[in-house]
Length: 269
Image 1: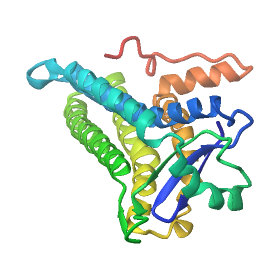
Image 2: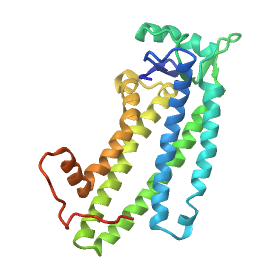
Image 3: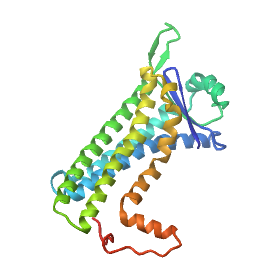
Image 4: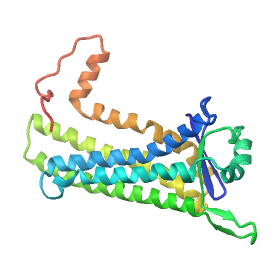
């Protein structure tokens, strides 16, 4: 897709710039890109909830499957909002076309995109009024970010305490395993906050709050951060666990290497 973001007045447009941007395929790409951002937050929160259920196999932990069911319902609503509220229409074509053409040299009349604008000028009174379809999308995004970030923070803190308590009674191999688990958890909690939640929050709320986006460079940062996050998240696991690091070194090194018994991990639950 090669996505680009452009903030104009009280709205923003997320559009494709690759050779596949032309309609109707470009519209499908834009819809999937929007939906994947919600899916990214959903899967991340399910990951933490499931980890919580493994360690706390009692109380609320046994009902971990409730959140994936609720999240699936929210993702269906997100998909419907994509189809009916943010994909190309005459209003968005008129609102963003000139500014996008001037800055990027791309005519959005031929390209796939999704867009949001929070205010629209009333043709009869000349006053700006709320554009309610976009405000609904803003509310949906806020619900997603609030619920998923709360679950990630709550479950992450609980897992941190559990690992820290277990580390006090562990020694040798298990102490190293718990240390690796601890740093993996910390980094996997901080990374999505910095690469998914914060850029997404600024992008969505910047037009509404009239923030200087040129100073923040959010138009350049957000598409990159959301795209490389899955790679960074995977690298954290491969780098933090010593056994994985040794295995990777062995994979890419010509010199035969062995993993000592002190770092070999047979089973990790």
